[in-house]
Image (cartoon, rainbow, N blue to C red):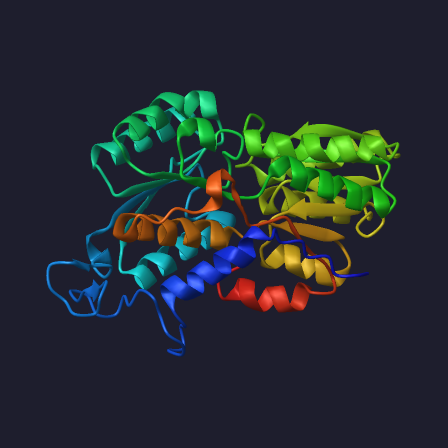
Amino acid sequence: MKTRLRVAGAIIAVGALMLTACGDDEGGGDTAVDDTNAGTSAGSGGTGGDDTVDLTQAGDVTIEVVTHGQASDPFWSVFKNGVDAAAEKMGATANYSAPDTFDMVAMAQLIDAAVAKNPDGLVVSVPDFPALQDSLAAANEAGIPIITVNSGSDNYQEIGALTHVGQDETVAGRGAGARMAEDGATKVICINQEVGNAGLDARCNGAKEAIEEAGGSLEVVQVDLNDAAGAQSTIESTLQADAEIDGVLALGPTGAGPALAALQGLNKAGDVQLATFDINTEVIDAIAAGDMSFAIDQQQYLQGYLPIVFLTLNKQNLNTVGGGQPILTGPGFVTADNAEQIKELAAAGTR
């Protein structure tokens, strides 16, 4: 199986920006912004005086981060690792908050609370734009620079955000569906643990488009994010009710785990194609063992890291990124060819 890792070209430019702005972790190379000498100034002419521009006071930068995913969730814990690493690197303060469950009323309240603090920037996921629209409008009207992350690629411009950092979920869904169809799947079920989450719905819809174009079909099966045993039972029942199902697409590790357990319980692991979005150790092990075909990796560590860098530089130096376009962190494919390498990085909390 050939390795397929598709990372958007924008990441190349982002990488260059990060190297320039953040320097080398090992201490090599020159840096345009020296965040190790707080209180000093970088003068435009190198002579000091009144015409200096201070780019080193990142300690005065406070960024509020509000997402729909709890930091205890395996996916969002990696995202938060990116937030924390970038804040430490840039010398900024980043405060993370999320509702206890997928609750848009609670999330809107968290956004309102973040706006009331008048931060230097707001990083926010947008899984349900209509539900969060008023709170996001208040942030924009308050003059707070916003970057949307993870979900919100369809709405970030209307929100007035500087850019969106994430993957286009419809494109990612189409990529997953095309890959499954190419590998022989003709009748697929898409396991959705958060129906109504625009990003997850787009994944299923994109996969459905690609599979139908290849002559197959896809149906959505809804499960409860907080009930793994119930999700496994639902998936088992669905598979038992239709022996022609030859593909299962999960939308994240919380769906992939019960799906794999269901296939193993029915002695169909390896026979029915299983793929997922997003990764954790269990997903990577299943890919390496041949029980899962592939995973779509949107690189959530970057989704947490990059906005902190961007908003800090926006505050310090009025930098903007994206040119009105999103910064894409995926989709990429994790397969048996690269699973062991990715596993080491996942163990370190960065993938």
